[in-house]
Structure formats: C-alpha cells, structure tokens
Amino acid sequence: MNTEKVDVLVIGAGPAGTVAASLVNKAGYKVKIVEKLKFPRFVIGESLLPRCMEALEEAGFLDAVKEKGFQEKSGAKFVKNGKVCDYLFADQFTKGWTWTWQVPRGEFDKTLADTLEKQGVPVNYETTVTGIQFNGSDSITTVEDINGNLSQIEAKFIIDGSGYGRVIPRLFNMDRPSSLPPRKAFFTHTLDVNRSMSDEPNRITIVVHKKGVWIWIIPFSSGVTSLGFVGEPSFYDGLEGTLEEQLRTLIASEPYLKERFKGVEFLFEPRTIQSYSISTDKFYGEGFILTGNVTEFLDPVFSSGVTLASVSSQLAGHLVTRKLKGENIDWEKEYTEPMMQGVNTFRSYVEGWYDGTLDTIFFADNQDPHIKSQICSVLAGYVWDQENPYVSNHQTALNKLSSIIKYRDSIKKTDTTSV
Image (cartoon, rainbow, N blue to C red; front, side, top):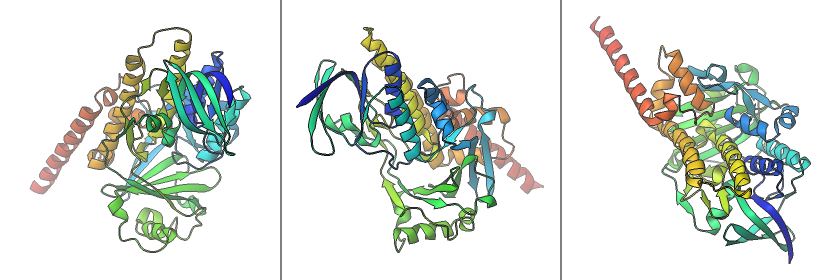
C-alpha cells in the first residue's frame, strides 16, 4: 500500500478545509487535502457574512473570488406581512467589512480549492477516509480513491473540515444531538426573470411566512435566485403532488413571492434537508482539531455556516502552526472557548428568531439606531466583539429589549384606547 508523509492532513475541500490548509501552507509546512466528492458540487449556505472576508483575505483567496463577479451583498432584509426591516452592514457597530457576496457554493468552493492548489497544496478529490489510527499526535489515515485503490497518509496533525461529512466525529462516535429542534429545508434555484419587481439583488431577503416558518431569497449575479422554505417537518404535511408541485403550492401561498416567482423555471427538482442541526462532545483531541460544520451546525437563518467554518479554520490554522513549531497550546482556552462564544451567540439569535423575540425587535416601530447597529454587527458575523452588549450578553440583551418594546407598545395601545 502506498504511503505518503505530510505535516498536516486536511479532510474536506470546502471553505473550512481550504482556509486552514492555506494558512498552514503559508507557514512553510507540507499540507494535503482529501475530499470525498468531485468539485464543483452543490451545497447550501449561499449567503456569506462580512466577517468571513477577513479569513478569505488572510488565506489569499479574495482576488480570485472577486474575479468571479459574484453578487455583492450589503445587508439583510426581513419581511413580515408587508413590513420591512433592513439591516445594512455599513451601519454596523463593529469595525470591519461592510459587504460580502452571495454565491453559488459549487462555483465558490471550487474557486477556493483551485486557488489553494495554485498556492502549492494538492487536493485529492473523490477520496474517502476509511480509517484513522492515532499514535499520540501522529496519525495514519487510510483513504480510498474512486477506483477502490487504498493508500495511507502519515501526518503530524489532522484538521477535519469535512462539513456535513463529519469524518472524525463519526469514526470515533463523537456526534451529539443539537439542543435545537429538528427542522426541514425545502429549496431550489430559479431563473428569476421577474427580479426587476424587487429592490434586490444586493442582499438576502428573509420572509416570515408564519410563526416558525420562513423563506430565504438569495439572488445571484447570474440572474438565478436560490429560494427555500424552512420549518418544522410537520409544516409540509398535506402537500400533494411532485416536489415541484409542492414547492409551487407553497410559493403561491405567500403573497410576497407569488407574483415574482409565478411559473418561473426551476433549475433542478426541489430538494430537502432535514434534521441538519448536530453537535459533538469535543472540538479537538490529541492529533486533531475539528472546524466548521464538523463542530456544530445550527440553522441557516442567519447564514452563520460559512462564517463559523472560515473563522474556526482561520483560528485552527494558526494554532496548528504553533503546535508544529513546538508550542504548548491550551486548546480549550484558545480554541473551544472562543468558538463556543461565536456558536452560542448565533444560537441565541436562532432561538430568538423561532420563539418570536427577534420578531418583536426586527419589526418594532421607532427602532433605536444605536441598538440596531449593534444587532447588525451580529448579523454581519462579528459575534466575537465583546464590546458589543448584544454579543457579550446576547441572550439577556435580546430578551430585555424585546420586553421593553412590548411594554412600550402596550402603553401606547392603552393611551390610544383611553383617548
């Protein structure tokens, strides 16, 4: 059996894997990526957040991505019963990037991987990890290519950025259920011929369809738009016909969508992803570190996936480099704690979205501009800014603000009634 030796083996060629691999490679270490699928491949998570731009820039990917002409994204728009709440990243509290992109992930991810190969890092596609043996921090990974040929890769460290594949958690029984309830996404890409009817395409639009059910609208620069419904699995009960007929029924039932997307061409048969939230009992071990969705995937509502993937890999790349140089790393303090800060901040916003807390805040009248800028920073992905009270005290601050708004509105209603 052929055996190859590297300093770092990276599993997965998505944003998590490529960002980490680039940083370790730039530090002068020999890196290799193995990827189970052939690129380009379809995946959701098509609306990026400004915070991930910092990771893409440090990895040396920005110029290549800019050349693709992807749709620039300047904010997020929330719609409910005709009422609109716009968050523009230029107004955010935290200093940082004020724009990002909306991307077909197949093309975006391939751009990152192709750029990485130009930097000198080999990417082996259609290569599946079948087993890993650790000897301290050293490891021997057995992989199988598309033709069934087995080979081994000896590495001093492994970075697992395998996303939904969750290679190390599944091999070593580390998967744990998420605290979030199961939900189902139902989506397609459309030929958006009626886009001129909208004030897009420079941001994602999220529509509140009914309590606990929402819709994403993500326009791309090509004229294609990603469209999907998200809700509890029971929401879809009773829908009849083919998957295309079911999705068209849902589109017709939402006033914000029905004229713009009436009769538009679906570019592929609608797909579903269900019970996607998952966690793990640890983010690292002797000889490996988990990044991106391998650690925990929450929910697509605030587009946190690629941001958590790229930022965790940015941090992991630096820590692994220091480890290879002989430094002692406090993985819990330097990796798990900051990553859980980001995950838990997003989790509070996801929970607040579904329980109605953010509904009260987003669609309130006379919003405080300063508070709105602080919340905007979270929506831009700056969930590590401890100077922002809506980060440092994320759950308490949201609940308190929602209660204040409800109390204020009840007083106004009482005053109006008395008059």
